[in-house]
Length: 242
Image (cartoon, rainbow, N blue to C red; front, side, top):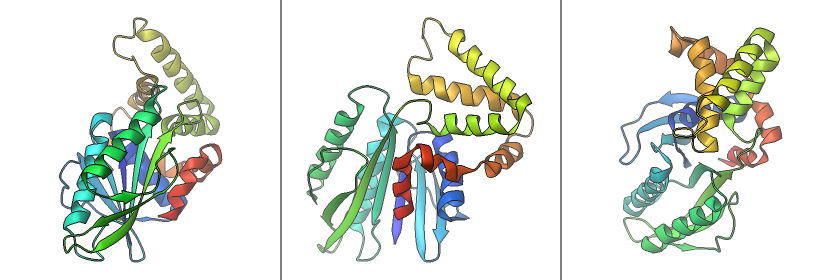
């Protein structure tokens, strides 16, 4: 079985790899050949199953990447299609979910795909489309729209986990959060809640891993108890179905 998780940015791209390895027992495999539409991709393996985690390069491009996967399915032979497509986005605005689902429907209609009603996010959608030989293939799409609050973001969970482990680091995190909350009072740059969350994350890691970023950050991320994230973000439990 082949699956793909499409996320928006570089932080989610990295954190999702650690999450899937620690919580759902996937293993590192390779950096595959670059897929059209994606900024970066990474493949994980679990027995005979394959999981691609792809960074779209921004919220405006995430559904373009989904469409590319559907195109690959349209050109594939039987058994080569992606069976599961997960699209993860953030609930930045009040109408995020409605617009997101509407855009998914438009893409599916353009691809002449058959699907059940798409009425809400965070539920699997059964899709029937045709492959390169005109044969019907059945796939599933999971649009995950993550609630945006103190427990909803991967970055927030990570900082909380680190703060619980070390009092010194907790003080750095708290000072960094205070700085981010006050540094841009006119909201010229941090004009979305998601940007504020990412800025707090980046400020801490800029201090903690200022020199050897890759090795130090990798070691920190490996030590986080990612399995606890499912307890506070229940929708992520669906990723165990891949």
